[in-house]
Amino acid sequence: MVPHDELITLRDWVRWGASTMSEHKVFFGHGTDNALDDALELVLGVLHLDHSLPSDYLDARVTSTEQDRLLKAFEKRIEDRIPTAYLTGRAYFYGLEFIVNENVLIPRSPIAELINDQFEPWLGGVEVNRAMDLCTGSGCIGIAIAEAFPDVEVDLLDISPSALDIAQQNIDKHHLSDRVSAIQSDVFSGLSDERYELIVSNPPYVSSQEMEELPAEYLAEPELALEAGDDGMDIVSQILLQAPNYLTDDGLLIVEVGASADLLMERYPNVPFMWIDFEFGGDGVFAITAEQLVEYRDALIRSSH
Image (tube, rainbow, N blue to C red):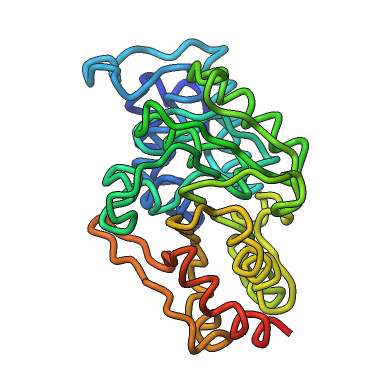
């Protein structure tokens, strides 16, 4: 793609990488939204550096071995459209670093803002003793909840053993094995009689048609974590029907459905979803109480068929 001797410093590689990604119309949306930030994260990640690196070090020279690694990484990013996080093996959520690979979605949920606010005013002051991160993937949401609520026990549920392996690595990375557990479960099937004050989920919600229209970078992510039937509602419908069995009476359910929000409201027009506005961007996340789920259970059942 470019002779090594023309790219001498970290700054050279960042600038060239950003220009080349822009030229090839690479898509951004996995933790960065522009070529310069993406190129910086790729260079730092491949060279095992973090963003605390003083800017003066961007003028440090890159060894020939490091040049080879960077060139291969940029080739995969540009030609194969592999997201940067999969090339570096790391991603960020709630200010924390997480291990990621192709078996999990790359963290990017606006739910981080809710965690920062400790889910208020939606929790209404309810004391959280147990929380669940359903369809956990890397475990980022549940682990962030554990960091935000130092006394809360958190269960991370996912159907994929490969995803749970990454979630467990992240539990260990953040030294939370005393309060956070990874559980294999198809939606709620792996549980017995547990009850939670808070259930949070970023489940699969992409329709079959939307899958065909996604940028190539998104198709590098696990299909199991994205697609949920013809209309994208297969998993969300199960969650709405079954969540009351696992919430405390004063419990709260938070679910991200992204661009499928309109479809959800069309399917369940009488259900009082509380749609959350985010200060720092993002949408398609609703809150609903255990009490409301019980009250509108008949409407949920009718509309789910």
